[in-house]
Length: 530
Image (cartoon, rainbow, N blue to C red; front, side):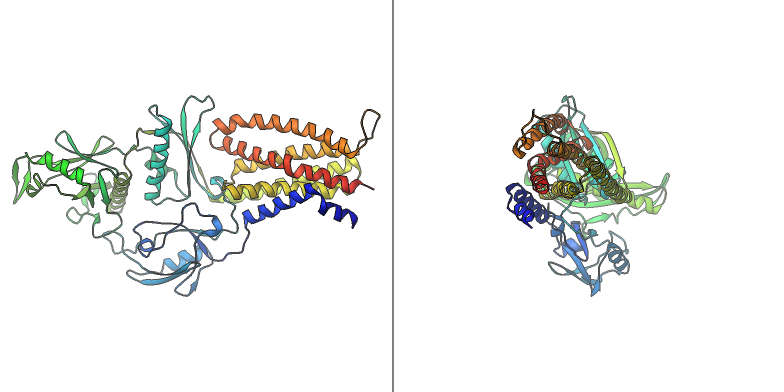
Protein backbone atom coordinates (compact mmCIF):
# COMPACT_ATOMS: atom_id res chain seq x y z
CA UNK A 1 0.00 0.00 0.00
CA UNK A 2 2.88 2.32 0.81
CA UNK A 3 4.45 1.72 -2.59
CA UNK A 4 1.20 2.64 -4.35
CA UNK A 5 1.09 5.91 -2.41
CA UNK A 6 4.69 6.61 -3.37
CA UNK A 7 3.84 5.97 -7.03
CA UNK A 8 0.86 8.32 -6.96
CA UNK A 9 2.90 11.07 -5.32
CA UNK A 10 5.89 10.75 -7.68
CA UNK A 11 6.21 13.72 -10.04
CA UNK A 12 7.39 11.71 -13.06
CA UNK A 13 4.60 9.17 -12.64
CA UNK A 14 2.08 12.01 -12.33
CA UNK A 15 3.40 13.52 -15.58
CA UNK A 16 2.94 10.14 -17.29
CA UNK A 17 -0.63 9.84 -16.00
CA UNK A 18 -1.47 13.37 -17.16
CA UNK A 19 -0.21 12.64 -20.67
CA UNK A 20 -2.16 9.36 -20.76
CA UNK A 21 -5.34 11.26 -19.86
CA UNK A 22 -4.61 13.89 -22.54
CA UNK A 23 -4.00 11.11 -25.09
CA UNK A 24 -7.33 9.54 -24.13
CA UNK A 25 -9.08 12.88 -24.65
CA UNK A 26 -7.39 13.31 -28.06
CA UNK A 27 -8.30 9.79 -29.20
CA UNK A 28 -11.84 10.19 -27.79
CA UNK A 29 -13.09 6.60 -28.10
CA UNK A 30 -16.86 6.27 -28.48
CA UNK A 31 -19.62 3.95 -29.65
CA UNK A 32 -21.26 6.10 -32.33
CA UNK A 33 -24.07 4.54 -34.36
CA UNK A 34 -24.92 5.23 -37.98
CA UNK A 35 -22.74 6.16 -40.93
CA UNK A 36 -20.60 9.28 -41.18
CA UNK A 37 -20.71 11.76 -44.08
CA UNK A 38 -17.19 12.26 -45.44
CA UNK A 39 -18.19 14.58 -48.28
CA UNK A 40 -21.20 16.00 -50.10
CA UNK A 41 -21.03 16.54 -53.86
CA UNK A 42 -21.93 20.06 -54.86
CA UNK A 43 -25.13 20.45 -56.89
CA UNK A 44 -26.26 16.96 -55.82
CA UNK A 45 -29.64 16.31 -54.17
CA UNK A 46 -27.98 16.36 -50.74
CA UNK A 47 -26.06 19.54 -51.55
CA UNK A 48 -29.20 21.33 -52.72
CA UNK A 49 -30.92 20.31 -49.48
CA UNK A 50 -28.33 22.34 -47.57
CA UNK A 51 -26.19 19.47 -46.27
CA UNK A 52 -22.52 20.41 -46.13
CA UNK A 53 -19.37 19.02 -44.53
CA UNK A 54 -16.87 20.82 -42.37
CA UNK A 55 -13.34 20.86 -43.77
CA UNK A 56 -10.68 19.18 -41.63
CA UNK A 57 -13.27 18.04 -39.10
CA UNK A 58 -12.19 15.51 -36.50
CA UNK A 59 -13.41 11.99 -37.38
CA UNK A 60 -15.80 11.74 -34.42
CA UNK A 61 -17.22 15.20 -35.28
CA UNK A 62 -18.36 14.15 -38.75
CA UNK A 63 -22.10 14.45 -39.27
CA UNK A 64 -23.75 11.04 -38.97
CA UNK A 65 -26.84 9.72 -40.74
CA UNK A 66 -29.05 8.05 -38.12
CA UNK A 67 -32.30 7.42 -40.01
CA UNK A 68 -33.76 7.78 -43.49
CA UNK A 69 -37.56 7.86 -43.47
CA UNK A 70 -37.64 6.14 -40.04
CA UNK A 71 -35.34 3.38 -41.37
CA UNK A 72 -32.45 2.94 -38.95
CA UNK A 73 -29.08 3.24 -40.73
CA UNK A 74 -26.36 1.41 -38.82
CA UNK A 75 -23.89 0.44 -41.55
CA UNK A 76 -22.82 1.52 -45.03
CA UNK A 77 -24.61 -1.54 -46.37
CA UNK A 78 -27.86 -0.36 -44.74
CA UNK A 79 -27.49 3.01 -46.47
CA UNK A 80 -26.89 1.63 -49.97
CA UNK A 81 -29.63 -0.99 -49.58
CA UNK A 82 -32.15 1.76 -48.81
CA UNK A 83 -30.89 4.18 -51.48
CA UNK A 84 -31.17 1.49 -54.18
CA UNK A 85 -34.96 1.48 -53.67
CA UNK A 86 -35.44 5.23 -54.26
CA UNK A 87 -37.52 6.48 -57.18
CA UNK A 88 -37.39 9.69 -59.20
CA UNK A 89 -38.59 12.89 -57.47
CA UNK A 90 -39.11 11.04 -54.21
CA UNK A 91 -38.84 13.18 -51.07
CA UNK A 92 -37.08 11.54 -48.14
CA UNK A 93 -36.32 12.73 -44.60
CA UNK A 94 -32.75 12.25 -43.51
CA UNK A 95 -32.14 12.48 -39.78
CA UNK A 96 -28.59 13.12 -38.67
CA UNK A 97 -27.02 13.86 -35.31
CA UNK A 98 -27.07 17.55 -36.29
CA UNK A 99 -30.52 18.00 -37.78
CA UNK A 100 -33.35 16.84 -40.04
CA UNK A 101 -33.20 17.38 -43.83
CA UNK A 102 -35.71 16.96 -46.63
CA UNK A 103 -33.98 15.63 -49.74
CA UNK A 104 -35.69 15.17 -53.11
CA UNK A 105 -34.19 12.71 -55.55
CA UNK A 106 -33.52 13.88 -59.07
CA UNK A 107 -32.61 12.33 -62.39
CA UNK A 108 -29.25 12.12 -64.04
CA UNK A 109 -28.63 14.62 -66.82
CA UNK A 110 -30.98 13.89 -69.73
CA UNK A 111 -31.93 10.54 -68.26
CA UNK A 112 -34.77 8.98 -66.30
CA UNK A 113 -32.36 7.19 -63.95
CA UNK A 114 -32.19 8.32 -60.33
CA UNK A 115 -29.02 10.25 -59.58
CA UNK A 116 -26.89 9.40 -56.57
CA UNK A 117 -27.89 11.49 -53.52
CA UNK A 118 -24.38 12.94 -53.41
CA UNK A 119 -23.13 11.51 -50.11
CA UNK A 120 -19.68 9.98 -49.67
CA UNK A 121 -20.06 7.91 -46.51
CA UNK A 122 -18.12 5.62 -44.20
CA UNK A 123 -19.01 3.66 -41.08
CA UNK A 124 -19.09 6.06 -38.14
CA UNK A 125 -15.54 6.43 -36.71
CA UNK A 126 -15.04 4.99 -33.24
CA UNK A 127 -12.27 7.44 -32.38
CA UNK A 128 -10.25 10.39 -33.66
CA UNK A 129 -7.51 8.10 -34.96
CA UNK A 130 -7.09 8.89 -38.64
CA UNK A 131 -6.29 5.95 -40.89
CA UNK A 132 -3.81 6.59 -43.64
CA UNK A 133 -4.05 5.48 -47.22
CA UNK A 134 -2.54 2.05 -46.55
CA UNK A 135 -5.24 1.25 -44.00
CA UNK A 136 -8.38 2.55 -45.77
CA UNK A 137 -7.49 2.15 -49.45
CA UNK A 138 -6.94 4.66 -52.25
CA UNK A 139 -4.11 5.97 -54.42
CA UNK A 140 -0.81 7.67 -53.68
CA UNK A 141 1.32 9.48 -56.27
CA UNK A 142 4.55 11.44 -56.30
CA UNK A 143 4.34 14.29 -58.81
CA UNK A 144 7.15 16.25 -60.43
CA UNK A 145 6.64 19.61 -62.24
CA UNK A 146 7.99 19.32 -65.78
CA UNK A 147 9.40 22.85 -65.66
CA UNK A 148 11.46 24.48 -62.95
CA UNK A 149 9.13 26.24 -60.52
CA UNK A 150 9.57 28.48 -57.50
CA UNK A 151 8.33 27.72 -53.99
CA UNK A 152 5.46 30.14 -54.54
CA UNK A 153 4.43 28.32 -57.73
CA UNK A 154 4.55 24.94 -55.95
CA UNK A 155 2.26 26.36 -53.28
CA UNK A 156 -0.10 27.61 -56.00
CA UNK A 157 -0.07 24.17 -57.69
CA UNK A 158 -0.98 22.49 -54.38
CA UNK A 159 -3.82 24.97 -53.73
CA UNK A 160 -5.10 24.54 -57.29
CA UNK A 161 -4.98 20.75 -57.06
CA UNK A 162 -6.91 20.82 -53.78
CA UNK A 163 -9.60 22.98 -55.34
CA UNK A 164 -9.69 20.90 -58.51
CA UNK A 165 -10.03 17.62 -56.62
CA UNK A 166 -12.65 19.07 -54.26
CA UNK A 167 -14.70 20.32 -57.20
CA UNK A 168 -14.43 16.87 -58.77
CA UNK A 169 -16.07 15.39 -55.69
CA UNK A 170 -13.11 13.51 -54.15
CA UNK A 171 -12.64 13.57 -50.38
CA UNK A 172 -9.87 12.58 -47.96
CA UNK A 173 -7.25 14.41 -50.01
CA UNK A 174 -3.73 14.95 -48.70
CA UNK A 175 -1.34 17.08 -50.76
CA UNK A 176 2.07 18.12 -49.45
CA UNK A 177 5.34 19.52 -50.76
CA UNK A 178 8.39 17.25 -50.45
CA UNK A 179 11.94 17.29 -51.77
CA UNK A 180 14.13 14.62 -53.27
CA UNK A 181 16.84 13.12 -51.08
CA UNK A 182 19.42 15.18 -52.97
CA UNK A 183 17.33 18.32 -52.49
CA UNK A 184 17.68 19.16 -56.17
CA UNK A 185 14.02 19.06 -57.22
CA UNK A 186 10.61 19.92 -55.85
CA UNK A 187 8.12 17.05 -55.60
CA UNK A 188 4.46 16.88 -54.61
CA UNK A 189 2.99 13.99 -52.64
CA UNK A 190 -0.69 13.38 -53.40
CA UNK A 191 -2.85 10.87 -51.50
CA UNK A 192 -6.54 10.33 -52.25
CA UNK A 193 -8.52 7.82 -50.22
CA UNK A 194 -11.06 5.92 -52.25
CA UNK A 195 -9.77 7.11 -55.65
CA UNK A 196 -8.67 4.80 -58.43
CA UNK A 197 -5.38 5.07 -60.29
CA UNK A 198 -7.21 6.10 -63.48
CA UNK A 199 -9.06 8.96 -61.73
CA UNK A 200 -5.83 10.28 -60.26
CA UNK A 201 -3.98 10.19 -63.59
CA UNK A 202 -6.85 11.90 -65.39
CA UNK A 203 -6.98 14.75 -62.90
CA UNK A 204 -3.31 15.54 -62.27
CA UNK A 205 -1.60 14.86 -65.59
CA UNK A 206 -3.66 17.55 -67.30
CA UNK A 207 -2.29 21.07 -66.94
CA UNK A 208 -5.80 22.39 -67.45
CA UNK A 209 -4.80 25.22 -69.75
CA UNK A 210 -8.08 26.44 -71.26
CA UNK A 211 -8.39 29.04 -73.99
CA UNK A 212 -11.31 30.23 -76.08
CA UNK A 213 -10.02 31.89 -79.28
CA UNK A 214 -11.63 33.92 -82.01
CA UNK A 215 -9.24 33.85 -84.92
CA UNK A 216 -5.78 33.93 -83.34
CA UNK A 217 -6.82 36.08 -80.37
CA UNK A 218 -7.80 34.78 -76.94
CA UNK A 219 -11.33 35.74 -75.93
CA UNK A 220 -11.20 34.26 -72.42
CA UNK A 221 -9.42 31.62 -70.35
CA UNK A 222 -10.34 29.36 -67.45
CA UNK A 223 -10.26 30.38 -63.79
CA UNK A 224 -12.05 32.82 -61.55
CA UNK A 225 -10.45 35.88 -63.18
CA UNK A 226 -12.28 35.17 -66.44
CA UNK A 227 -15.30 33.12 -65.42
CA UNK A 228 -17.75 34.03 -62.66
CA UNK A 229 -19.95 30.93 -62.77
CA UNK A 230 -19.96 27.45 -64.29
CA UNK A 231 -23.21 25.49 -64.34
CA UNK A 232 -22.57 21.97 -63.04
CA UNK A 233 -25.06 19.33 -61.93
CA UNK A 234 -28.19 21.27 -62.92
CA UNK A 235 -30.14 19.60 -65.80
CA UNK A 236 -31.63 22.91 -66.95
CA UNK A 237 -28.20 24.31 -67.90
CA UNK A 238 -25.85 21.32 -68.28
CA UNK A 239 -25.83 17.71 -69.48
CA UNK A 240 -26.17 15.85 -72.75
CA UNK A 241 -26.89 18.24 -75.62
CA UNK A 242 -30.46 17.78 -76.95
CA UNK A 243 -29.41 19.48 -80.19
CA UNK A 244 -26.68 16.86 -80.72
CA UNK A 245 -28.22 13.62 -79.39
CA UNK A 246 -26.30 10.37 -79.07
CA UNK A 247 -26.13 8.60 -82.41
CA UNK A 248 -24.05 6.00 -84.26
CA UNK A 249 -20.84 7.20 -85.93
CA UNK A 250 -18.12 5.65 -88.05
CA UNK A 251 -16.16 4.52 -84.98
CA UNK A 252 -19.13 3.51 -82.80
CA UNK A 253 -21.27 6.09 -81.01
CA UNK A 254 -20.94 9.81 -80.28
CA UNK A 255 -22.75 12.02 -77.75
CA UNK A 256 -22.67 15.79 -77.36
CA UNK A 257 -22.68 17.73 -74.11
CA UNK A 258 -23.18 21.36 -73.15
CA UNK A 259 -23.14 23.62 -70.10
CA UNK A 260 -23.56 27.33 -69.54
CA UNK A 261 -21.00 29.68 -68.06
CA UNK A 262 -21.05 33.32 -66.98
CA UNK A 263 -18.08 35.39 -68.08
CA UNK A 264 -16.60 38.26 -66.14
CA UNK A 265 -17.30 41.73 -67.52
CA UNK A 266 -13.68 42.04 -68.66
CA UNK A 267 -13.85 38.76 -70.63
CA UNK A 268 -17.20 39.71 -72.15
CA UNK A 269 -15.77 43.06 -73.31
CA UNK A 270 -12.74 41.27 -74.79
CA UNK A 271 -15.05 38.96 -76.73
CA UNK A 272 -17.07 41.95 -77.95
CA UNK A 273 -13.96 43.73 -79.23
CA UNK A 274 -12.88 40.59 -81.17
CA UNK A 275 -16.28 40.21 -82.88
CA UNK A 276 -17.21 43.80 -83.72
CA UNK A 277 -15.35 43.81 -87.05
CA UNK A 278 -16.35 40.31 -88.20
CA UNK A 279 -18.61 39.92 -91.21
CA UNK A 280 -21.90 38.02 -91.22
CA UNK A 281 -22.34 34.81 -93.23
CA UNK A 282 -25.50 32.81 -93.89
CA UNK A 283 -25.68 29.10 -93.05
CA UNK A 284 -29.01 27.55 -93.99
CA UNK A 285 -31.66 29.76 -92.43
CA UNK A 286 -29.39 31.21 -89.72
CA UNK A 287 -26.89 34.08 -89.80
CA UNK A 288 -23.52 33.64 -88.09
CA UNK A 289 -20.26 35.59 -87.77
CA UNK A 290 -17.45 34.72 -90.17
CA UNK A 291 -15.18 33.38 -87.38
CA UNK A 292 -16.17 30.67 -84.88
CA UNK A 293 -15.06 30.59 -81.27
CA UNK A 294 -12.61 27.68 -80.88
CA UNK A 295 -12.10 25.97 -77.50
CA UNK A 296 -8.67 24.58 -76.59
CA UNK A 297 -7.76 22.42 -73.59
CA UNK A 298 -4.04 21.88 -73.09
CA UNK A 299 -3.46 23.22 -76.64
CA UNK A 300 -5.81 20.62 -78.15
CA UNK A 301 -9.01 21.67 -79.86
CA UNK A 302 -12.06 20.57 -77.91
CA UNK A 303 -14.79 22.13 -80.05
CA UNK A 304 -15.59 25.09 -82.30
CA UNK A 305 -18.82 27.00 -81.89
CA UNK A 306 -20.53 29.24 -84.41
CA UNK A 307 -21.29 32.73 -83.10
CA UNK A 308 -24.79 34.09 -83.75
CA UNK A 309 -24.81 37.33 -85.75
CA UNK A 310 -26.69 39.12 -82.99
CA UNK A 311 -23.62 38.81 -80.71
CA UNK A 312 -21.37 40.89 -82.97
CA UNK A 313 -19.73 43.59 -80.87
CA UNK A 314 -21.94 42.76 -77.86
CA UNK A 315 -20.50 42.07 -74.42
CA UNK A 316 -22.50 38.94 -73.63
CA UNK A 317 -21.67 37.37 -70.28
CA UNK A 318 -23.75 34.18 -70.58
CA UNK A 319 -22.57 31.68 -73.16
CA UNK A 320 -22.80 27.91 -73.67
CA UNK A 321 -19.80 25.59 -73.90
CA UNK A 322 -20.14 22.29 -75.74
CA UNK A 323 -18.12 19.20 -76.60
CA UNK A 324 -18.54 15.51 -77.35
CA UNK A 325 -17.69 12.01 -76.18
CA UNK A 326 -17.13 8.75 -78.07
CA UNK A 327 -17.47 5.06 -77.35
CA UNK A 328 -18.07 1.61 -78.75
CA UNK A 329 -21.73 1.72 -77.73
CA UNK A 330 -24.33 4.20 -76.50
CA UNK A 331 -23.54 3.78 -72.80
CA UNK A 332 -19.78 4.18 -73.25
CA UNK A 333 -20.22 7.28 -75.45
CA UNK A 334 -22.64 8.79 -72.94
CA UNK A 335 -20.28 8.17 -70.00
CA UNK A 336 -17.31 9.56 -71.95
CA UNK A 337 -19.28 12.73 -72.80
CA UNK A 338 -20.32 13.32 -69.19
CA UNK A 339 -16.77 12.63 -67.91
CA UNK A 340 -15.31 15.07 -70.45
CA UNK A 341 -17.91 17.65 -69.48
CA UNK A 342 -17.09 17.32 -65.78
CA UNK A 343 -13.36 17.63 -66.45
CA UNK A 344 -13.88 20.75 -68.57
CA UNK A 345 -16.17 22.27 -65.92
CA UNK A 346 -13.55 21.61 -63.26
CA UNK A 347 -10.79 23.26 -65.29
CA UNK A 348 -12.96 26.30 -66.02
CA UNK A 349 -13.70 26.70 -62.30
CA UNK A 350 -10.14 26.26 -61.04
CA UNK A 351 -7.95 27.58 -63.83
CA UNK A 352 -4.73 26.08 -65.20
CA UNK A 353 -1.55 24.98 -63.48
CA UNK A 354 1.67 26.93 -64.16
CA UNK A 355 3.25 23.76 -65.55
CA UNK A 356 2.34 20.19 -66.37
CA UNK A 357 2.85 17.54 -63.69
CA UNK A 358 4.56 14.24 -64.30
CA UNK A 359 3.64 11.19 -62.21
CA UNK A 360 6.94 9.78 -60.96
CA UNK A 361 5.37 6.93 -59.00
CA UNK A 362 1.82 5.83 -58.27
CA UNK A 363 0.49 3.15 -55.91
CA UNK A 364 -3.01 1.83 -55.34
CA UNK A 365 -4.00 0.14 -52.09
CA UNK A 366 -7.09 -1.98 -51.50
CA UNK A 367 -9.08 -1.26 -48.30
CA UNK A 368 -9.26 -5.03 -47.69
CA UNK A 369 -5.49 -5.10 -47.31
CA UNK A 370 -5.70 -2.29 -44.77
CA UNK A 371 -7.64 -4.44 -42.30
CA UNK A 372 -5.05 -7.20 -42.71
CA UNK A 373 -2.22 -4.71 -42.12
CA UNK A 374 -3.80 -3.52 -38.86
CA UNK A 375 -4.47 -7.02 -37.55
CA UNK A 376 -0.99 -8.27 -38.44
CA UNK A 377 0.72 -5.20 -36.94
CA UNK A 378 -1.22 -5.51 -33.66
CA UNK A 379 -0.51 -9.23 -33.45
CA UNK A 380 3.21 -8.89 -34.19
CA UNK A 381 3.55 -5.95 -31.80
CA UNK A 382 1.92 -7.95 -28.98
CA UNK A 383 4.13 -10.97 -29.67
CA UNK A 384 7.26 -8.78 -29.70
CA UNK A 385 6.40 -7.09 -26.38
CA UNK A 386 5.63 -10.41 -24.66
CA UNK A 387 8.76 -12.07 -26.05
CA UNK A 388 11.08 -9.27 -24.96
CA UNK A 389 9.54 -9.02 -21.51
CA UNK A 390 9.80 -12.79 -21.06
CA UNK A 391 13.49 -12.76 -21.97
CA UNK A 392 14.17 -9.86 -19.57
CA UNK A 393 12.41 -11.63 -16.68
CA UNK A 394 14.29 -14.88 -17.35
CA UNK A 395 17.60 -13.02 -17.53
CA UNK A 396 17.11 -11.06 -14.30
CA UNK A 397 14.99 -13.69 -12.49
CA UNK A 398 12.72 -11.02 -10.94
CA UNK A 399 9.02 -11.35 -11.70
CA UNK A 400 8.29 -8.01 -9.99
CA UNK A 401 9.76 -6.07 -12.96
CA UNK A 402 7.11 -7.49 -15.31
CA UNK A 403 4.47 -4.92 -14.30
CA UNK A 404 6.65 -1.81 -14.93
CA UNK A 405 7.84 -3.21 -18.28
CA UNK A 406 4.36 -3.95 -19.65
CA UNK A 407 2.87 -0.69 -18.34
CA UNK A 408 5.67 1.36 -19.88
CA UNK A 409 5.53 -0.37 -23.29
CA UNK A 410 1.75 -0.05 -23.55
CA UNK A 411 1.79 3.56 -22.31
CA UNK A 412 4.37 4.50 -24.93
CA UNK A 413 2.29 3.10 -27.79
CA UNK A 414 -0.85 4.78 -26.40
CA UNK A 415 0.89 8.17 -26.13
CA UNK A 416 2.14 7.97 -29.72
CA UNK A 417 -1.36 7.18 -31.02
CA UNK A 418 -2.82 9.94 -28.84
CA UNK A 419 -0.33 12.49 -30.14
CA UNK A 420 -1.08 11.42 -33.73
CA UNK A 421 -4.81 11.95 -33.08
CA UNK A 422 -4.10 15.36 -31.51
CA UNK A 423 -2.03 16.71 -34.43
CA UNK A 424 -4.18 15.01 -37.09
CA UNK A 425 -1.41 12.73 -38.32
CA UNK A 426 -2.60 9.76 -40.40
CA UNK A 427 -1.60 6.32 -39.16
CA UNK A 428 -0.43 4.22 -42.09
CA UNK A 429 2.12 1.45 -42.62
CA UNK A 430 4.98 3.92 -42.23
CA UNK A 431 3.53 5.19 -38.96
CA UNK A 432 3.09 1.64 -37.66
CA UNK A 433 6.69 0.88 -38.59
CA UNK A 434 7.77 4.06 -36.77
CA UNK A 435 5.80 3.02 -33.68
CA UNK A 436 7.45 -0.40 -33.70
CA UNK A 437 10.87 1.22 -34.17
CA UNK A 438 10.34 3.64 -31.26
CA UNK A 439 9.06 0.81 -29.05
CA UNK A 440 12.14 -1.21 -30.03
CA UNK A 441 14.48 1.59 -28.97
CA UNK A 442 12.34 1.95 -25.83
CA UNK A 443 12.91 -1.69 -24.94
CA UNK A 444 16.67 -1.14 -25.30
CA UNK A 445 16.45 1.85 -22.97
CA UNK A 446 14.36 -0.05 -20.43
CA UNK A 447 16.93 -2.83 -20.40
CA UNK A 448 19.67 -0.25 -19.78
CA UNK A 449 17.73 1.16 -16.81
CA UNK A 450 16.91 -2.31 -15.49
CA UNK A 451 20.50 -3.46 -15.82
CA UNK A 452 21.77 -0.44 -13.91
CA UNK A 453 19.31 -1.10 -11.09
CA UNK A 454 19.94 -4.86 -10.80
CA UNK A 455 23.64 -5.20 -11.58
CA UNK A 456 25.97 -6.20 -8.79
CA UNK A 457 27.62 -3.15 -7.38
CA UNK A 458 31.40 -2.73 -7.32
CA UNK A 459 33.59 -0.12 -5.78
CA UNK A 460 33.75 1.72 -9.10
CA UNK A 461 30.13 2.74 -8.92
CA UNK A 462 28.17 4.58 -6.31
CA UNK A 463 25.24 2.63 -4.94
CA UNK A 464 22.57 5.36 -4.76
CA UNK A 465 19.44 5.24 -6.94
CA UNK A 466 20.22 8.73 -8.21
CA UNK A 467 23.61 7.64 -9.52
CA UNK A 468 22.10 4.60 -11.23
CA UNK A 469 19.43 6.71 -12.98
CA UNK A 470 22.04 9.26 -14.03
CA UNK A 471 24.27 6.59 -15.60
CA UNK A 472 21.33 4.98 -17.40
CA UNK A 473 20.00 8.23 -18.84
CA UNK A 474 23.42 9.29 -20.09
CA UNK A 475 23.34 6.22 -22.36
CA UNK A 476 19.65 6.74 -23.23
CA UNK A 477 20.09 10.40 -24.23
CA UNK A 478 23.15 9.60 -26.34
CA UNK A 479 21.16 6.96 -28.25
CA UNK A 480 18.17 9.34 -28.54
CA UNK A 481 20.13 12.16 -30.14
CA UNK A 482 21.86 9.73 -32.52
CA UNK A 483 18.49 8.38 -33.69
CA UNK A 484 16.97 11.87 -33.85
CA UNK A 485 19.78 13.17 -36.08
CA UNK A 486 19.53 10.08 -38.30
CA UNK A 487 15.79 10.67 -38.84
CA UNK A 488 16.06 14.37 -39.71
CA UNK A 489 17.15 13.90 -43.37
CA UNK A 490 14.25 11.48 -43.93
CA UNK A 491 11.84 13.97 -42.39
CA UNK A 492 13.08 16.93 -44.42
CA UNK A 493 13.80 15.28 -47.78
CA UNK A 494 11.71 12.13 -47.59
CA UNK A 495 8.56 11.46 -49.58
CA UNK A 496 5.72 9.15 -48.71
CA UNK A 497 6.73 6.24 -46.49
CA UNK A 498 10.16 7.65 -45.63
CA UNK A 499 8.74 10.89 -44.26
CA UNK A 500 5.94 9.20 -42.35
CA UNK A 501 8.37 6.73 -40.79
CA UNK A 502 10.74 9.51 -39.73
CA UNK A 503 8.03 11.69 -38.17
CA UNK A 504 6.48 8.83 -36.20
CA UNK A 505 9.87 7.55 -35.02
CA UNK A 506 10.98 10.99 -33.80
CA UNK A 507 7.61 11.50 -32.10
CA UNK A 508 7.80 8.09 -30.44
CA UNK A 509 11.36 8.29 -29.13
CA UNK A 510 10.80 11.85 -27.86
CA UNK A 511 7.74 10.82 -25.86
CA UNK A 512 9.65 7.83 -24.56
CA UNK A 513 12.82 9.64 -23.51
CA UNK A 514 11.09 12.58 -21.83
CA UNK A 515 7.95 10.95 -20.38
CA UNK A 516 7.65 7.14 -20.24
CA UNK A 517 11.26 6.11 -19.51
CA UNK A 518 11.79 8.59 -16.63
CA UNK A 519 8.51 7.32 -15.18
CA UNK A 520 9.72 3.72 -15.64
CA UNK A 521 12.88 4.43 -13.68
CA UNK A 522 10.82 5.82 -10.80
CA UNK A 523 8.33 2.94 -10.87
CA UNK A 524 11.18 0.40 -10.96
CA UNK A 525 12.94 2.12 -8.07
CA UNK A 526 9.81 2.04 -5.92
CA UNK A 527 9.04 -1.59 -6.86
CA UNK A 528 12.58 -2.78 -6.07
CA UNK A 529 12.95 -0.85 -2.84
CA UNK A 530 12.66 -2.91 0.36
